[in-house]
Length: 260
Image (cartoon, rainbow, N blue to C red; front, side):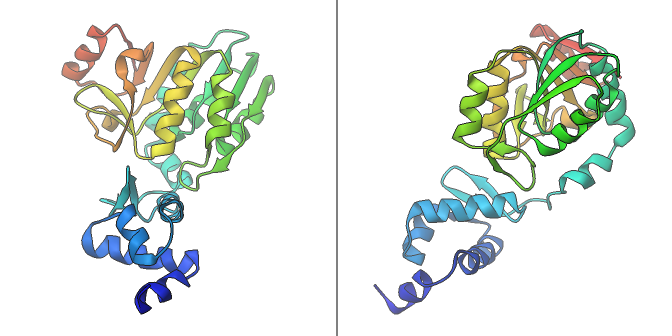
């Protein structure tokens, strides 16, 4: 082992991650296998570093490495205030579609928070989620039974991910999956900015009889890194986007569209 590798191998994870961020910002992207060789550590260690940096909003993960963020990620509470009026209208429309006694599998999304706040207080529902903010908002509903699935919490998405959460969701059969999205691209694919979140959303869809997708206007036609599922799996799209071209294509796939 060279002197440089020996020095790198003695670094703490925090010191190593600081150097990784510098490399990403300088070169635009890094590859996990190359970093493992440079630092003299296992690829598993590097993957943990990249996951931690991604959750802290410092890099964008991709399979086998990470890249520079195109734009800084907003934290969850700041995102909740952006376009709050629009999100409230979408959330209210989606909440009106929920019947008495329904079991809802709810993902982490600021628009979904507005949906929960719009559920009628006389409506009895069961809410299952992996997201701490969703669970907290659901607890404010007087008749909601709230079940939270645990796991490793992501700082940006503020929800639990990992094998335990995935297996727990696979064992469920919910009436509705209530889903937010980072984008629906021009190929009509629902997408997410976080790898673990994308996989979690896809699992929630499969565990539910119907999926309601809540998307603000700018999310239609928006590209995000990771594929979740084709929009054709969605039962109803709730949006404020009035772009007839993309909405017509979505409706042709058999998806109901509700405009706010």
